[in-house]
Length: 107
Image (tube, rainbow, N blue to C red; front, side, top):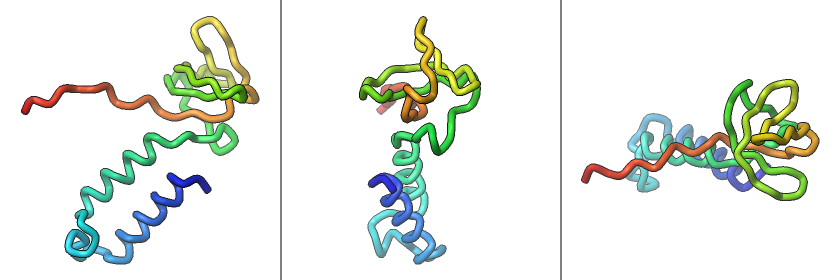
């Protein structure tokens, strides 16, 4: 289990422990804020290809067995397309969804 997975598990346990009580008074975050933190951690964790693969035609970040990171299109059949190179799943060891684009605050 990765560090991110352990933290997500602990945050979920914390929410369950306090159930629908005012979690904020115990830990400094309300349930909505805890959900936001959990969601951020889930979006930024590497997902091993052995665990699951992206949806077909999904653009993701990948890392390969040579520890290189790139943006790729998952074309299905355990193949990723990086511009002109095709990488087999065995070469790509993990992936993660692309982050949301930066949007300047209106404030």
